[in-house]
Image 1: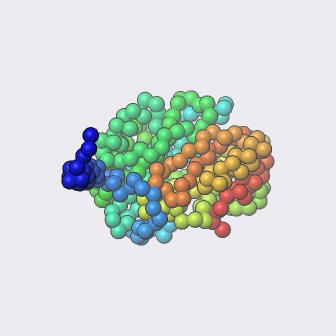
Image 2: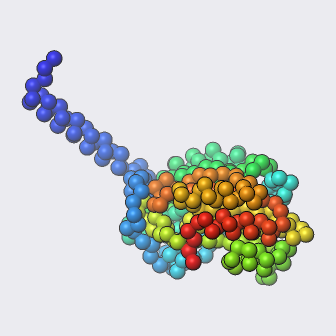
Image 3: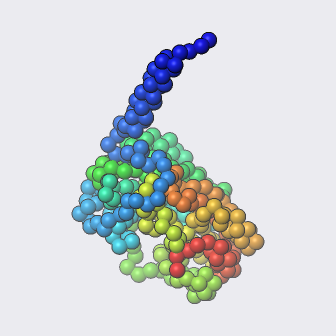
Length: 324
């Protein structure tokens, strides 16, 4: 059947108009909390976070009934969401909350709005309610996975993000946290308890200085690149770092858990280095949907002499592009 040129032109015009309507509808949002249309495509970091004060985040802290700390020259306000209420065991090790159960919500302000990005530790019973609360309140669920091998009770880690104004983000996060039993963080001890491993030896093996935290020994290592998500530059405090946590197990030993933040070309090298040293690979996944460069997070687990583990981790670290 032949179609006239005029009819073809009219058909193209109609299809073009329908496509424009569809795109416009897709760009609208039912929630004032999160504008997913601005967070769907990776792009270079054109929006940089600005320094803020406690007053900027008062709507958040008032809504949540909990406070946080600033990082990266006051450009990120991070609230800890630690599961101190859970008693988790993995591979025969009683997991201290600071080793593997430390969720958070981090907030930053940009020229086009405020952002929240975080990681929530939830039980299997809480997970469906948390997922529903996230989506009902305009927040995105960008990852869902485990940080530990076999463990009891079963817990999950879910990454979130959203944009809006601080009051909207605070209200949304309140609804999400109400679906969990995450309690406000306890005040830190006046004096840090001793860390029962050779911390000097671990520092020497890793070539970096760790931090004592509640009987644990920790490292938080930023990458050299500028990382962005949907055009928003992400300072390290948002969680785009390599994390190493040591929990002493006695006689110089430690359970070590954390994750490497890796680019595509680094993944194979780091897995090979970890396995050569007997460190287990737990998970390999992304935490974000539209980050640039696209970062893979490799979670690991080991129980052995702390310095021995540190030497293997150093080999893996040397295969990554860390900030000096």
